[in-house]
Length: 145
Image 1 (cartoon, one colour):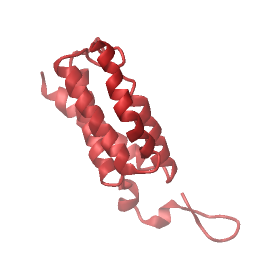
Image 2 (cartoon, rainbow, N blue to C red):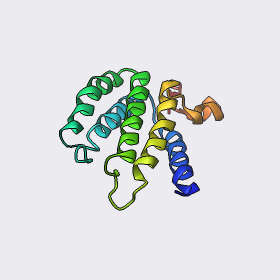
Image 3 (cartoon, one colour):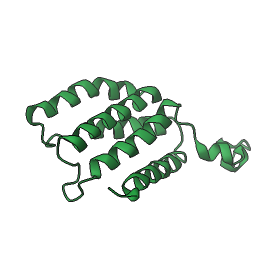
């Protein structure tokens, strides 16, 4: 294990948060609900045999609720971090060519999971005046970017 195995996934999580901060609501929430749902099946051949089916069964109702709630998206990503831990310790890595990939996924998922639990606030809008995100329309009033 090297420092990069811990630092790179955390930085990637922060980059993900920055990119998602540019996505308007409600698209941001819906898109991330779909991404969390896609992560449910990541490990279906991860080395636990039939037990791999337990996680999708448990996680599917959570990610479904995530289509309407950032908190459920956060819970889904933290659940996935737990599944990453299981695979890092006892299963197969998410990327067979990179033994520490499940640990990296755990860190990445935990970083974004905490952000979602906080309501997925846009870090871009909090740093830039709202007038920057206004696009002039033909009616004279600005619409949100």
